[in-house]
Image (cartoon, rainbow, N blue to C red; front, side, top):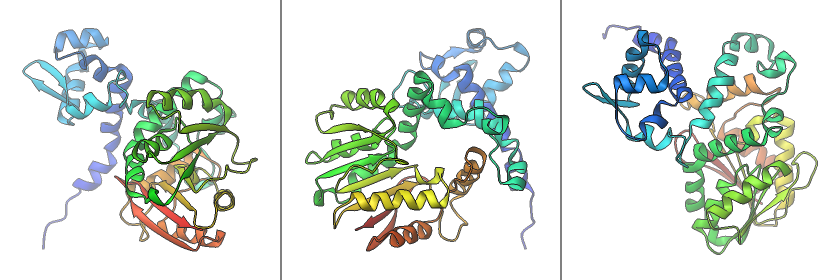
Length: 336
């Protein structure tokens, strides 16, 4: 019989050490600075404005965690950090981590209270604007957030664009499109398609800039509206990425019904996010994302593939399936 060890317990219990080290490095601009080239310890510490007491420990922790490399006294970015954590690159995912640092990290300290009360623990608790209200009120902050969401979802978006049988369809609409990466990737991979991005009016200029940059503005247009008050645009395929988990069950069902109504017979809905495995034992990220919905929203939660298929069938979809995309993300597909 093997001897039991508390290693996994202690590693998980202190996981916030590693998390905050990375988040502080992003806040300080470590990876953006080193994207210019390797730097010696003294020069890097001075540039970043770090106190000498713990700066070497900080940089060597980032090295031990795999985000930096060190040759003697000279530090460099790891390949992943250089690609995804340099603010000057379009592949930057640090925007969402900046939000995690400034907002989610302190809010998660109140998870226990949220579990006891069932109430959000974000700005709403303090009587100020919540996540979405604050973002949409500040154009620059909204643009950075939508850019980060695109980077975070890019792998899943590219997979959907390639593996779904788009040859059977001609038009699509991406609901809650944000910057428009899913809509753009579908168009890039499928030249015969024309699509729309549907979101609040504030998103329009950001969406237009993005699809222009990718060269698909002639086939991908923006439609302003609210999925709470407006019907969804008609199309052969309706997509929703990282949308349903923000809302309570009646709202989820309402959005699925709106998708059903927007489709012709034979049309399809694609819903994707960090779908929880049916046994609720494996996709830890999906389960923790559902806890994050407790922190951030009045009624949002993540769900299993079986849950999603059940809601689609209740709305009238004749066939459904679940397919893994990348990482923790999967899609639930329904055919009308």
